[in-house]
Length: 133
Length: 133
DNA sequence: GACGGATTACGAAGTTTGTCGTTGACAATC
DNA sequence: GATTGTCAACGACAAACTTCGTAATCCGTC
Image (cartoon, rainbow over all chains, first blue to last red; front, top):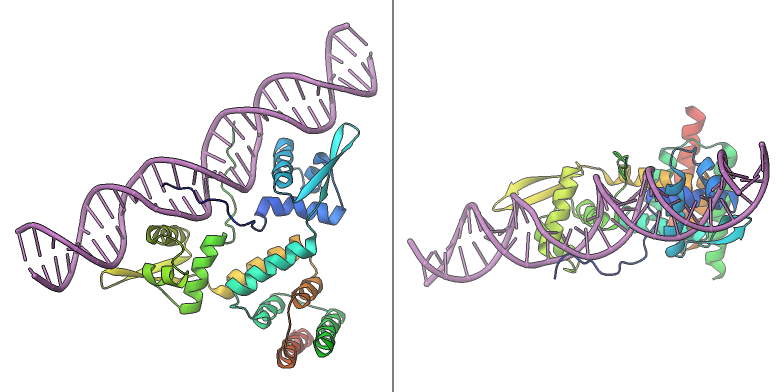
């Protein structure tokens, strides 16, 4: 028995995959050419196409014919992908502590007073939700 | 010219690598056997060893002799790895909005009042820091 | 000193990612 | 209708990840 690691759990997106998903989430959809342009044309056309085909195999996107080209749509919602990625980070890096994650998040960034206020509101909502539930 | 993708940017840890780094961060250090036990012995001894050797090649861990075995230490700090992973997620998934990340984070989780309070304190500190700096 | 257990070293192999060239299809244009 | 341009399909291929077998080494014990 050599070297087969069997079917792996569906994983998060790799860097390049995430580049492409990011475009589709932001724009809502995209043809190969559109996605490629959004990436600054730093990768070849066939590379983008291939990645989209791989993502389609994995069930992350689908496509429709549009004229002669395909238009690709994200099937996985960004929020769900984000939630999974965050879970992974909380568990593996911050030992399950969302507080520590938040501390690291705000450490590296500057926020306006308004942003901080909105983030407080998010915590307020979470608190009320906890009271009721 | 076929198929060379050149040197890629140093990336975050893959899943299995992260499993192993997670153990080292939590425990502070570990021998191959210790890491393997911490992972529930679901992977072979030589697999864990190999991953540690790869991580050492990448500069993520180092080792010291301890009796007949090697003891591995993390060189990359968890907070720094976490910061990089969070940046990636904020930019690629939440379109640069830390607020949306926070919203998703608290959406999926239950928090005690104390946890929420401590998270507010983290925001307070960030706010004061912004006032001064 | 031979044996057994633990450990590292070496390297093979399967899979996925990421890169792209080439080909073939098809449409618009000349 | 030949040329040109756009596009998907196919396949090649290097690099990385992940798995682990096997060999070599070392240390204690009998």
